[in-house]
Image (cartoon, rainbow, N blue to C red; front, top):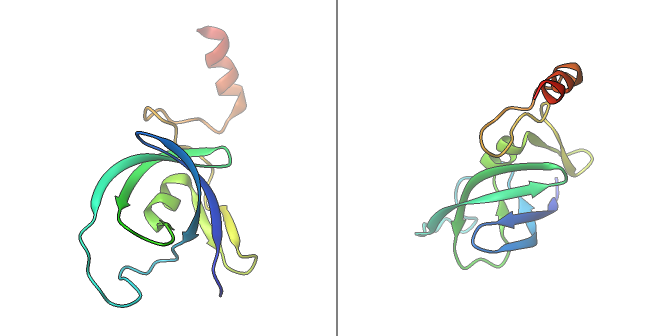
Length: 113
């Protein structure tokens, strides 16, 4: 399949845009080692999609964009085109408030406020 790389804006204590290797589901290190990593939460942004997700921090050469973060962003791997593609309508918004996909309802909410 080859590697898929994606530019991702990651925000926690600091904000940075980094190139990440997209993880397609592997759950162990390539060399079979087990390591202890620090965990935290960060905001991940790809294009207009933004969602909080767990981040594991360790001394790595290339950061990995994991499957759980892709799911939170509503993205999946299109291996044929070697890119990320929407897996569903984007319905996650910071603060936990869903965005309704029907524009008429959004307009009604905006005008009634």
